[in-house]
Image 1: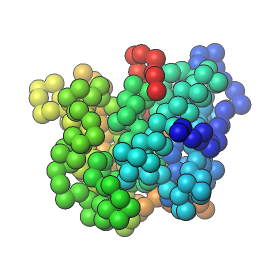
Image 2 (image 1 turned 90 degrees about the horizontal axis):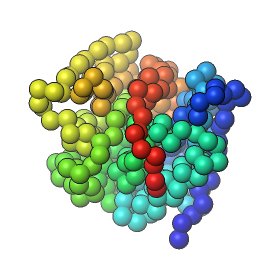
Image 3 (image 1 turned 135 degrees about the horizontal axis):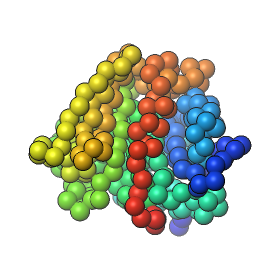
Image 4 (image 1 turned 180 degrees about the horizontal axis):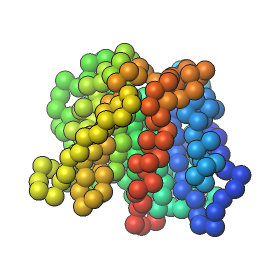
Length: 280
């Protein structure tokens, strides 16, 4: 049975004449939608840029630590991913947001579920950001999830991905991967393994039409994989950040000083749009 998700919705006080983009933000364990909104300062950016923000929330009755069930992709995780996809479609209908500009991001466990949503509903989202997230398709229990977070996958990431999706038929998903190199909760090897997976999902084989670029900023190194001028995969290593949303408000747990991940994410996301209207 489908569960009606709990959520917070932020609409900026002023909007332009064109339908606004919709940003979907998934919190991590021991967090709430409100804490993620304040910690990432996403609403302030929404005010400046004119987009709507949807913050789904995992209630404590569903998980004692408010975690999403990303590690149970065939059962509870699948139900959560599908319920939230329906919530996104409902929000598009109720707000008049642009269905070609729906952007999905998650932190930690939220990144795990965001990745699952992108695999199950690729035509719904124009771009994806996974901050401090686990590699996809490996964990099947809470215990194996903890082991994966600490050590990364012991099996080939492409093999793990193949258990969840046909990579050859997948339509692609422009993706930004952010991870702190001082993360002691989710080992940064997960980011490297996610990059391997999303290169496959975006069909970024090492051919003449794929360009690799590396840039450096204050506190981060960014590798970009481009095809036909479009960045389809960006891997951002945050050199001094732990397990936290970088550049967030440190008064909130799991947010820390550092490069502004909120702005980096918006810079990446706004380059992308889906050609067709989505369906859950």
